[in-house]
Image (cartoon, rainbow, N blue to C red; front, top):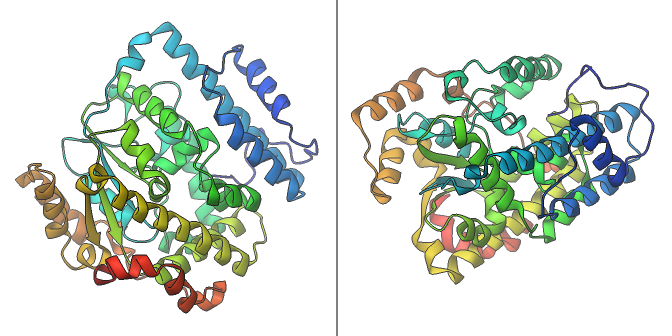
Length: 398
């Protein structure tokens, strides 16, 4: 997430970004040269760089983007080197992962937070996705020095835009979303949300990026290598775009699709993105944000519906969860998920969920975020027309 006054970012940076120069800078910083045999990440990188330069970015934004991109390219070099020195990493299996998908703002985060309370769950912390190298160590999962680097950045962002606290949690030790990890492949919807690269968002609207799930799995292998063990719990709305790719990589995946009226979710997400972009010195047009949000996530839903109908293994591996059920009776909602997938809902897990839903501040955000479709140029009737297949199939769940 872009940072205000981040150390090491030159405020007078003016050099245009060039892909080859970024790759070379990462090589120089790490002393490594091998980006691996899979070069599919370069497609998203090229789109991202083009989109950023098309914005005629401020020196601050360009410098911030340069630092982040070079850091991610450095991570890729280090992961390739880790696998060269320790080939056993690539043999690590990711078995029966549980994914939470569904549109942003449909209760995915609170469902993720509650499921993470299972003592047998292993979830990526937000800081693990943000700085995935060096490999996580089980003994220091709660004290890793990366926490002290990232959390102050999040805290300063909330100081700049305190209203964001009503929208989302900003705790780098909490369960982190896969779309943050997908930034390493330069194919994440986070790039538009965080730095306003509309051209990159337009590309993702139509593209199914190749190699994104290979990178996703590689990051999980790095985390699992020396880190805590357990059944992986993962979450990202972006998985809706390519459920076939997810199941090809994780054939025994179990998926929870959360549901809420898309009109409400588009409005909520547009509000959140607008606030985030303002907090990092951008001046977004709310209606442009609303248009990109509506078109992006309409495509995601239609892709997911088609995949679910076309592939029996995807249909069998999915369960639907209405947002209203999470709000009304969180324990029953979690028990329903576990029952469907044949997992034990232990007394200790139930106790933790009950305590969380009653006392944890993350559970108290529900209903505090105020927004309206009109503010973001979102036409409810058009959304319902464009998503007629969704309303026909899942309207009873919203």
